[in-house]
Image (cartoon, rainbow over all chains, first blue to last red; front, side):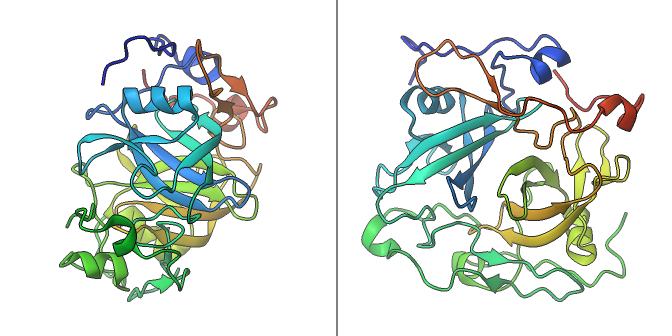
Length: 160
Length: 160
């Protein structure tokens, strides 16, 4: 997918002042061409997921108002919800001080969830603070949807 | 800094079920030995920053209840606040489904801010949704603290 006919262009990074204090969008993609994205639910502030965008996924998100990510497991741009119906409508899109990270606040569609395991948030387990040994605590105790019914035989994106 | 005499140990990653549905902490660090961390303010849900932890920074955070990161610019573990006084007390620490990302909710100390530029959050600028050209919008209009008074001659971590 190319960037032809798009109205969004990124500026070159010319100075720290431009990057930190300016109004031009000059994102820094990492060595894999990706920028990390934190997605939280508009209103509740629950962090739903952390993902990555490449150049085109960021442009598509800005132009369409729907969250697009780069899928590292499938190596393609991924409009969130295209399989599950759980689209993410962007209510607020932010870039950080040095423009190498994105924060996106979204409204959820469909089952009002985001995580392929079936929970609302991918961050459904807590790490207790203090001395170990660590035993993770489930903060969401019931799945919101049935992953098998939603995703069928699609490969699980989690890798060892 | 080694992991000697620490009570926190990470488990080997043996199966998708263990990683997604289990109670053992088996984080996946990237090729640089880092795991991305989203830090939001306890209560408000404002995302303050995105950073990275290495193995020891994660252990120190769990054991102490104070946010520790890996500084990529200084190449050392960094207890947030050690220079500025803006320590972060961890109220809730989460790991995601495939255990390759961390979400931390914190209470702020000192100036109640987090960003070295002087704003509360590093995400003080919004990218407007829709057709370009893009002009970033400042969502925080006043700095919370004076970076020069706080950091003096320390090098700016922002890189081109």
